[in-house]
Image 1 (cartoon, rainbow, N blue to C red):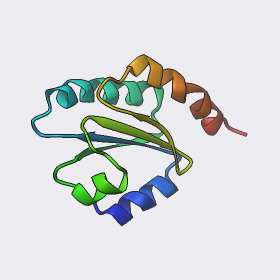
Image 2 (cartoon, rainbow, N blue to C red):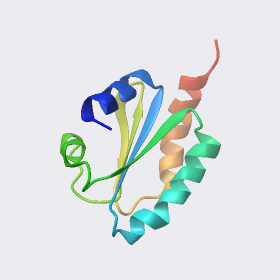
Image 3 (tube, helix red, strand yellow):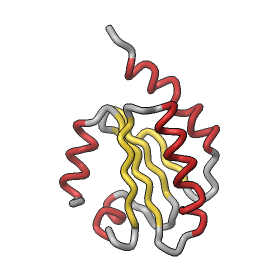
Length: 107
């Protein structure tokens, strides 16, 4: 994925999770399925994108990702939440729940 394609996805999707990981990062690989389950079940309209930070240096630099794992949530094209290595899934879920509910309300 190119930086421009990713930026376009962030603009067009109601929500995007960027999950930056590293091939040799045990924490990254342990957290990834937990994030996938959380977003699949509670936030299904948020598009999940998993990127190896080392294989995507231009994208990592653009989003100022200097360590892995780093998770960035965009809502309506704007960065809403950013978490690093010591992330709490519960805290992140609470942060996103209300704006997600408002964002997905039907008229």
